[in-house]
Amino acid sequence: MSTDSVAPMLDEFAICKLSHRYAQALDRNDQVAWAALFTADAVIESGNSKPRGYSEIMRIPVDQLKRYKKTLHSVTTQVITLSGDTALGEVYCTAYHIYEDFHQNGRFPFDLSHNFLIRYEDAYRRVDGQWMFTRRRISTEARFVHQIIPVA
Image 1 (spheres, rainbow, N blue to C red):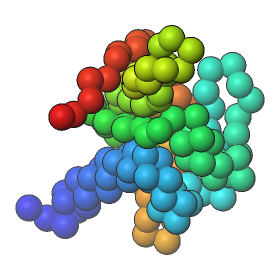
Image 2: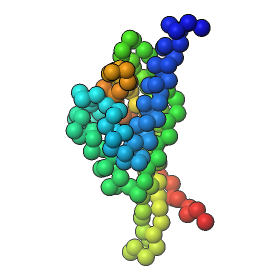
Image 3: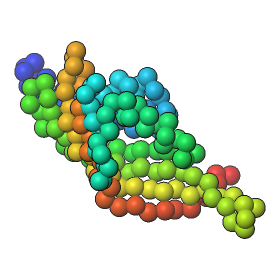
Image 4: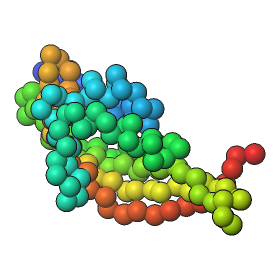
């Protein structure tokens, strides 16, 4: 197998890992890892909200973990289309957002998971040899809530 035939596979693998690093940095509020995922001109779009630029993107993990006790983003299907130093992708994700609720005026706490089935439409660019997000459009396909049973 020639280097020319391996390079696209390595690029696709690196882009897939980018989505995994996104999920992990978001769930862990790892600001250093999070910042390394995006170009300076990156935007994130979601629903009818106005696009968020780099400075707003940097606040996403902090804001997310203010609302929830923890989150877990599970990346599944990924389809990548390469074009030199740019690429487009579609990524599926199931996101779990754990929060505390209460019965009887706060006397009986319990946890709920607000879950999202997400489809990301992405644009990527290679910068100094590293693949980064330039755009991420977040489409929520479905939402549902489950009660969490404590681990014994």
